[in-house]
Length: 116
Image (cartoon, rainbow, N blue to C red; front, side, top):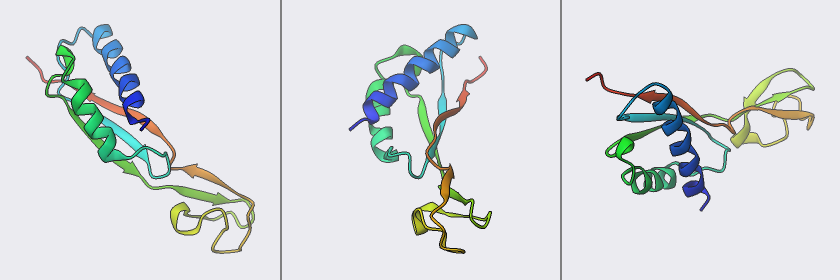
């Protein structure tokens, strides 16, 4: 389960941003997780709850996950298609000259704080 390692990196980055902006509590972290990123959202959330509650800055902080659909681009016909449904072979022209356009990201999109 690499989700715990990812959570530690998220916490590190959030703590750094909070320090730079003189924030003493974060209420939510919003993540964009790609459909083919190999990150399992519910495992990430479980690891988050365990690790975040050990940090004063993040106690009770919610992890919000947006799942980004995987999309592949075909250089053969120039079209885009759903990666998970069709894999590497373009459903339009059957070319294998394709590449993943999006869907493998693991990114912090927002860090939410409440005004005090």
